[in-house]
View 1: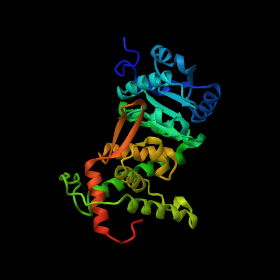
View 2: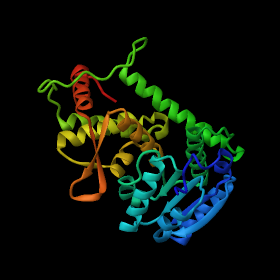
View 3: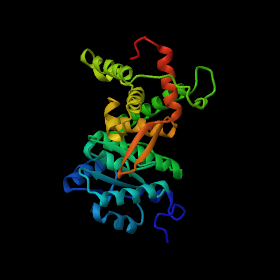
View 4: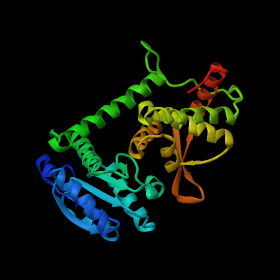
Length: 305
């Protein structure tokens, strides 16, 4: 019998189901426990990472699985992330993976789909991530609920952030009053030549603004990531997820949300490292590369910032 069958569990049962917590250390577990309890949810069990898959398999009901990562545990971490990602894809429960920046690349290579991934998060970010992912799961199974007052403000900010991402991407694919359309197919040999130094100068100019104004005043992670990947493409370099998050010049969790959305829109492509199964590279799609090169050609000598 499938312990997670949504047909067998009532909606009320899902709301009351506890969160299962697993972590890579006792300290990491304590940090996650504080956030989960502050969100108003109940913790059903806290288990070491090595026992997580067996414990999840025994759990009759769970609303979410929380994985707190403060160090890279190698194959044990990979196995748990693969297992949980499959379950989340099947709609069995929601999941949050909270990781340090140092462990981001191996985690990002495995935490896929609707798994909520946060990086170097504070307690407010953890509470908000849990609210977002459980709300998404409730919507999937048709359960209505109201976010906790303690996280409602942060959740509102996250909702606005997601809306802004969607609006920006809509503008990228269509002009005012025009129906959304996919970029025109790239034609071999039609991309104008572009020097890597030109792109580097643009990136350098963008970074210089932070000397005179607060950096978040000009936050534009999609454009910063596009420029970084274009520079890497011209220089024939590979860009891992962690490096791209740094290039976005916003908190890593925000950069990851943009990355996930841009990949889903076909603007970026994720490619597994053929030499290291625990790392993923990001690159421009062919259409995005051609569009950027045409853009630089049309702008010409004007400052592109």
